[in-house]
Length: 236
Image 1 (tube, helix red, strand yellow):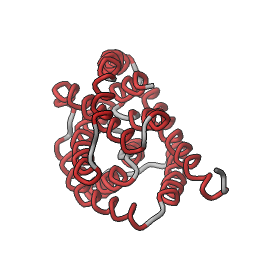
Image 2 (tube, one colour; image 1 turned 90 degrees about the vertical axis):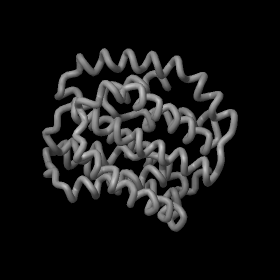
Image 3 (cartoon, one colour; image 1 turned 120 degrees about the vertical axis):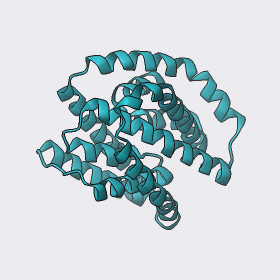
């Protein structure tokens, strides 16, 4: 699963956390799974930084970063006030609704204010549930942005937001040897995923690229809903 998630993240700019986190949670404690996910995601972004530099839109990236700095503390406060299952349920329903609207050809116009808002929303989700990707996927899926530019912006933004999230977690809850040892063990799979993902990125058609994004969004929504529902249906 780490290999598949690495291929997906390299070729589209999305998907590592969505695919890897549920798998890691089967093996590790939640904090360990989240920190391993953060470390490997940072590694992928760092490895591709030189290549994606030419595809970045620095102005949009700056607005995302500024917005996320405001969103990070909001996410932390939200998780302290709201029940995590209620938060996941609400986010899952929102993603499902908005993705359905996009599939039905509803489109969002890109503005500077919306860039800041999406960055803030992404930052708040990063610090609350560890998934900053859905707001950006939803936002850019509704525009005519090229796949190269989309991947460049998202991977560069992830490098920032995941690094901030990792530092915050280490300061607040600490870390351990299992996290770093397991991350090192996963490096060969990540490197192979980087290579295969680069090949896939050159081949993938823009229309197929859009289908992959919609599939990831729907998968995210379903995962969050399934994860949250047992609490309200009184399953063990």
